[in-house]
Image (tube, rainbow, N blue to C red):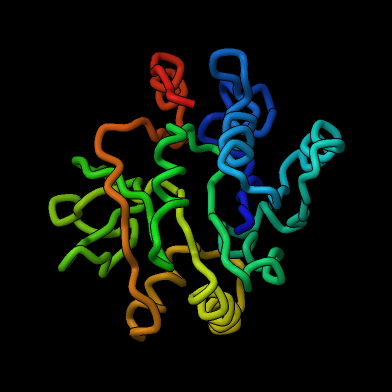
Amino acid sequence: MKAIIMAAGKGNRISSISNDLPKSFLEINGKKIFDHQIDCLRNAGVEEIIVVVGYKADLFIEAYSKSNITFIVNPFYERCNVLGSLWFALKHLNEGFYFLHADVYFDKSIFFDLKNDYRDCVLCVEPKNTIEEEMKVRVLNNNIIEINKEMDCKSAFGEFTGLAKIGPQVSQVISEAIKKRIEKMGSLDSFFETVLQDCVDQNLITMNYIDIGNRVSIEIDFPEDYKKALDTKLNI
């Protein structure tokens, strides 16, 4: 399957240390976060990599011009969220794909577990005491039944790490749901997880998960996240 990486955002919350670069260009142990992801995907045998860019798109395109990566530019990145970026990549969603946020620093074993999972809709979840900012999940009978940021932290099972697998059997369902959600809203400003919830509510998909346990998965949103990543030993 192909991988689709969301890398369009500016990263305002970490701009104090990113020096106006895309936050996935921040380096950990001498390597960009983005490069950690690309290396993991290549090592897992993922040959087709599609990256949706927006902020400083030219930096990505120039730096990786010889890397056999397909870049799609979201010109409205300042006025939309992840769902809008996925909409620009819609033609690539029909045959199954791995979904990644470009700012997640993760242990390669997590991705290998995801790749080897036989199920068709699988999210990597970190079980922990969540905070309001995070995309939280609620679980029932080993399936995710609810995913959003508004969920009460005490009732949440954990946090969606921003790494998922959408298999061929459900990718067309997801693609159609994205179209319907955007048409209904009349806007690109929404989350991918909103569409997943739409599909669960309509009994169109079963949303499964992998419990990553104590393995490393850090979404670099704030300076303290970056500091934590710098202090973390990664198996990649």
